[in-house]
Length: 176
Image (cartoon, rainbow, N blue to C red; front, top):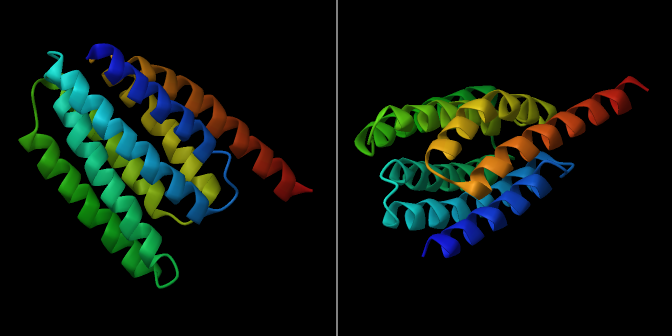
């Protein structure tokens, strides 16, 4: 079962890297929804292999998949006020569900990472999304290492590098 869990984690990692190379906010949200869904399965399977803290990863990735769908469907109608409201609502949901799924201090790392991730995905600017993803990566990486998530660990290292590369590339293009 652990091998199957790791396969889902590696698939989620591949999808995550692809997401940061997308050119539009909408494309990033679509691909991130698939990524979060794959990570739900990955962490559920890891929890079944004795990684109690992996439950937090599963449920919070589920919240993030729902958040991304809501953000996707409200993209065209969103005002700055609605964007802030959605970020606050989903941050509160992440805090509450994170606390309810709490297993140990390790869970806190993922809660913090998902809060940064929620701020990132709520801002309809691809470079701002990339910047906040770079901030959340060290928290998620530590969580992934401690829950034995191979795909998650690789994902955070490569996603950080991918987001940084795209961030710098887009800034350079905008400066020309």
